[in-house]
Structure formats: C-alpha cells, structure tokens
Length: 300
Image (cartoon, rainbow, N blue to C red; front, side, top):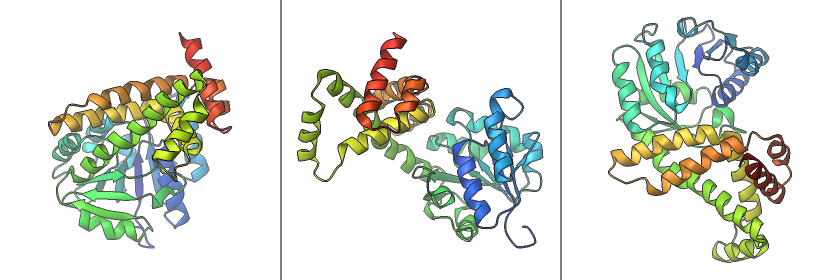
C-alpha cells in the first residue's frame, strides 16, 4: 500500500472499463495508477495513450513493467484475450498481489485463469454488472472466489459498490453471462424488430402495441439506447456473447437464441463504424434506424 494507505493499481487493458475505473478512482485519491495495453506501442493505440496522459496514469512499457509494485492488478481486456493477458502477467506477479479478472468471459474461462495463477497471485472473479459510464468506479461489481471477502473491504474503502456472489470462482461470471442472454438479446431484438418496422412504415403502430403489452416502457428511448450500445460496442459484445454461448453449453443449454444475438451484435459493430451512423446516434431512434438502414444497404 502507499503511504496514505491507498492501494497502487495496475490496469492490464486500458479500454473503456479501465479508463472509467481509473478516472473515478483518481477522484477518491488513488494517485498511483499504471496501465499497459497491447495497443500502446502501435499507432492505433494513440487514443488509449492520450487517455492515460489525461488521467495521469503511467503508461507501462510492458506487462512486466505494469504489474511491478502494484497492490491490485485489474485485467480488463477483450474477452478473447483474457487468458493470454493473465499468462503474459503470470511470471511477474507476486503472491500478495490481487488479480481482479473483470473480463466478460464464461465461468469455465475464469476457472481456467484462476488455475493458471494459483499460488502466483490472489485471483478474484469479478463481474461488472452495468455499463461503466456514468458511474465509473461505482459501477456494481460481483466478486467470487477464495479472496473475494479479503478484497471487498479494500474496494469498498475506495467507494466502490461490491457484493459477493460466492466462494467459488465462476459464481460471479455465471450471473453475468446468464444475465447477458437477456440484456444483449433484447438489444438484438430491438434492432431486428424496429429496423423492420421502420422499413415497413409501421413503427408508430409497433410502439403503440408494445406500450400496451409493456406499460411504462419508453420504447423510443429504449431502442435508441440499445442501438447506440450495439453501434458503439457491437464487436466487443459479439465476442462476449461467444462466452455466453460457452457458458450455456457448460450448463447443458443449447445457445440457439444467443447464436442469433452474436450475429446481430457483430453486424452492428461493423455498421456502427459508418460516419453517418455515428452522427445519428445522438439524434433519436428514428434517425439512427434510417442511418443503419442506409449503411447496411451500402455494405451489400
């Protein structure tokens, strides 16, 4: 710990989640923060490097450099890279360090990672249960594993919102993954339903009908929000849903609906890069749907 008894933090992966946590924790007094991202040495990593500079987070030159001296290592990489990130850090970790795996992966992947780091560092299965903006470090977190109860008071001391899912690694991941079947599935359904409604010219009637079935739901607002999430993060969400599919298979449930969600999320991740779609995201659901429809037609 630092002299003022606040932990020294290290981020492996400095995308949206890492930046959100870092900015919030800076405000509660955590000044010793380091980050490493595999994009840092590349031209494509300039946005991440600029974010680190703006937040006062030290840019490490490697995973080894990043974890040196840290009390808590937070792994926040892409779903497909979670095990590789742990393996890259493994040789440089110490038994007294906490390794918080906040990646959206299956319980099986969390258990595999925990086994990899057994005796190397204090591994904690962490599930991020809501978007990291605007709540940043106060985004609800579920913790699981042998070291969950030890790390929880430390995190709560940093004004973080935590609860313990259970003593077994994978318990937090299971809740996150199974919940995503519904959350990200609804996003995909919103796209499919309202894109068809827009093209058929029956959008108002669909909103009116759904409002009767689900009173109190502001469908235009919900649709606009879900489309923005898919357009901005569809590629990452598609990868996360692959982990959801693995989770379902681990539980003996065929991921039939999830397979369609994966395809829709990935498709929107590509369409969402179009400048016309980016420009429409703040204009409301009707404009977003029109931009998506045109961008989709231009791709075919």
